[in-house]
Length: 484
Image (cartoon, rainbow, N blue to C red; front, side, top):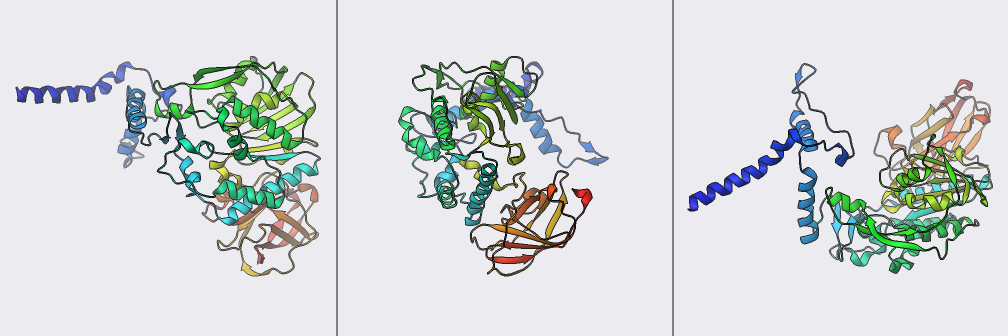
């Protein structure tokens, strides 16, 4: 009897393991679930040689096509997340049904602290952007969005110790020091948290949180705007959160969402072109499909007080779309790590929104903006030695960039580049940004700037860089008329 039980148990185990394999020819593709192109079947022999990566590539191919994969993942995460409350699928399970992105713990505990130079570089970069927008008689505001764990920390697991300060608080202090206009979204969200402004099972705010944030953004810009006070709404359990989808690709739990009864003014999309069903397209942009949404342009067909908006945004900006569109004659929403300041028209407003877990992206690459000219350089800078600088033709401008020592003092965070020779001397203020993609290195300190072609600079120039209370001699460079 005991032997028969063991045989039956082994047979059942093998049958369960073999079921997905047996179903492979009969089930539909996992492409829709994976939201990506599935891995192609690898070749055992490649370019006349044995493919040494065959096993890894085959495993990826097999995993993409394994039947019942989403159901098995959902079942495993249900046990780990809901019953054992342990991290799974990049998700941390909190109390009372709240779940969080696994990366929230980094900012929460300040284990991903940026250097003082990096924090100062972000603040200086934003100050230069603000200067550019104000120079065109526009208004600028920066919108740092807090991670959900920073707002609803009472539901975050107690095994994670909350730091007294982190990148968010340090950056706000620097923004205050430099006079950069911003909305303290962490303070605002915590003030309204009892109203339930973030989803339990999504990493983002809900539409009520977005409405509160929108009003604060418009107040920060100093612009007239509709407040939508007293708008009626439905509170329905019909929202499928992004975190819940990570845990349960098949099935899962719904979350509550606010659906406001607001009659927005009619508008059309200028980008992408050819949109027929405007409402359907807007709903797609507000979802997590993230299809063709890197540039969204709109034009109001009603009467509005504000002319133009250029908004850099991430996934938090999705919920802001209808409010911002309804208050500007023309609006452009871009998802990018490289804002294009020439796209900010004369008198236009600029909003720069980004979630705190991605603050490092603010200095991943320098914004496309012509470097402002300055009258002088620091007079008491000490000799820092030689550095290598690069001058490259970008087609629309000349970019000058380079690396600075890792132990560079923070100083005031400002960096100046003096080009001497050619057809005249020029002093520019550069972005304090290390161009990782261009330099293909892991340095933390660098500078980057673009020269306005209308300056007509041409000839051989000596390059001198002033940063961190030191002066560096750079690589001699040549700018020709053809490059302009």
